[in-house]
Amino acid sequence: MKDEITGMKAHFVLIHGISGGGWCWYKIKCLMENSGYKVSCIDLKCSGIDPSDPNGILSFDDYNKPLMDFMSSLPENDQVILVGHSAGGLSVTAATHKFAKKISLAVYVAATMLQQGYMTPQDLTDGVPDLSDFGDAYDVEFGLGKDQPPTSAMVKKNLQRKIIYHMSPNEDSTLAAMLLRPGPIQALLSAKFTKEDENVKHKVPRIYIRTTDDRVIKLEQQNAMIKRWPPSEVYVLESDHSPFFSTPFLLFGLLVKATTSLDN
Image (cartoon, rainbow, N blue to C red; front, side):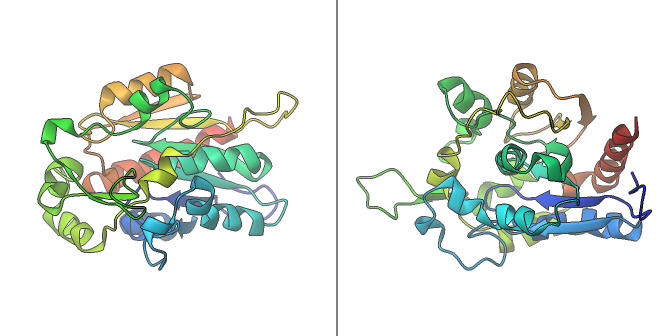
């Protein structure tokens, strides 16, 4: 997709999942920029190089503030394509509720896609990873005290490759093990969005990219979210939970394909 006035290609804004950071998109960013696209990779609070302590991030609005600040800073006539991975899907949805006119397309990559966030038990079943097959999979911290729910969590280092990156190159899972940070799970679980105003005419089209060998957001969870809130298109990747590492060229191709849907 090109801007009809300037001839510029689309501007992609890439949003990582919990524990990740803008760094996880390095292959996709390189492929896109080499093809002439503009790319922005956001670090959410306590992620990437953001210095915040995850145990002090207790609300989703706080966690997601870097994306909302970025969207606010865009000129009124600018439009971007938002791409969210995993829990980054919650960030994408939150942005579409507040900045619909600045978003031409929302793409969910192996992502949590819930219209109103975590409002019901079914939302939790569909959108929260169930890693019970792997036993005690998380290292957790209790920033509010041991008698309170944990404030942050991260998949244990000895399980990260097996769960998140089992089809990815060893170099990438090694890099990730060095860069992953505990994620603010209380903040994520507090993600709830008000219902869209029925009078808002601008609806953001959505595309979902399913990952068939995903051990984090399992395929049945992805399918359930797609069924409950159907996107305009569904693409499929034979990938683990991290297609930006395991199948970067195919993911890049699907993201470029997604832009063509805007021209139809």
